[in-house]
Image (cartoon, rainbow, N blue to C red):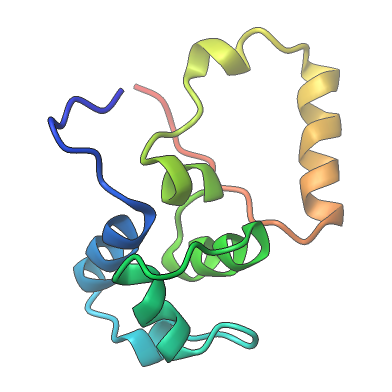
Amino acid sequence: MKTDSVAETVGQRLKRLREKQALSQRDLARPGVSSAYVSRIEDGSRQPSVKVLRKLADALGVSVEYLETGEEIPLRILESFTLEELIQAVRKKLRRGETLTIKGGG
């Protein structure tokens, strides 16, 4: 859970993640997402669509959920699903061309 006193915006998070990986806005650009558009997202003058968030999250190696909210899906939520429900959700994401980010637990 986020405890920062000031919430980080999608644009601020995008910029932080991009700079952490030493990428320029041009490096992050993708088909349908120009470097100028990345700049506008980072400065807060544009809100990206889910489609754009997917492309940027994939390029940065993070989940769409993290890029959008700054939080991953809590394990307790995942534990409330059956294995079959999780498999169906994964298949659905893959059919839509989404990237899955799986992180190991402790």
